[in-house]
Amino acid sequence: MKIARMNVDGKIKTVVIMREDQYIPLDDSIQFYDITEVSVDGQKPLLQSIRNRDLLVPLPRVTSIRDFYSFEEHVRKARAMRGLDMAPEWYEIPAYYYSSTSMIFPSGSSVPYPIFTSELDYEMEVAAVIGKEGINIKREDALSHVLGLTLANDWSARDLQRKEMKIGLGPSKSKDFATSLGPYITTVDELEDLMESGDRFDISVEAYVNGRKYSSGNIRDMHWPFSELIEYASKGTRLRKGDVIMSGTVSTGCILELGTEEYGWLKRGDVVSIRSPALGELINEVV
Image (cartoon, rainbow, N blue to C red):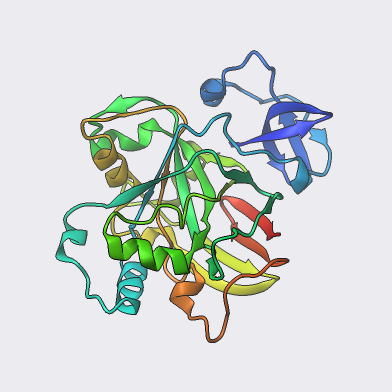
């Protein structure tokens, strides 16, 4: 099931997307996190082009964002650019930081260029949306707490980030000005055929800027799979419905990693598209 939230004739509706031009609007009485228990078999979908400008953030409320650092190749290259080797501790615990929930952008929306940077970057990521609460969740039970996966873009101000990282508390203002999610949530049951080794997903993702392919990767390369991220995040802390667990940058998934000599930082008017056969297309213009 692919779950989206849309502006339908001026009203916010939760819909099940059947195809690019077909969706089924759900009754307003259905609770969002009970949606996987709803059967749409036999219902006639509406035939209407799904316009990006009608898409909303694909869940009613983002209660928190934990953005992890899960891809070894990306971590290695990013640290090397700062003259650092891999930290042994990275292999011991899956590190993350919290990002702001007040600046979430849906697919099709414009993302403002922040006033405090001249080195704007995208980060190609995948996010797990928590659909069932829990604390001290075990790895083997973790995916039962996930409603589904969605694409994500963790926009980054690299010049400010370099300063923040030297202080030692990790990224903050260099990240909290924008996070994009969407266009829809693909539920875990629909992704079963793409699962490997019980809790890893074989899901490819690509990133394009103005139609030019920049990045290509697969989340099966996560050193820490989502099940371990959820296990770690829930230690002594309750995960809630609407919490978003982001994978961190997929390998090759940002300009910082690719090199500015060939690609250059993002500028106003650039259109960034993150695409996946399983998770759709997340597209935003920088303004």
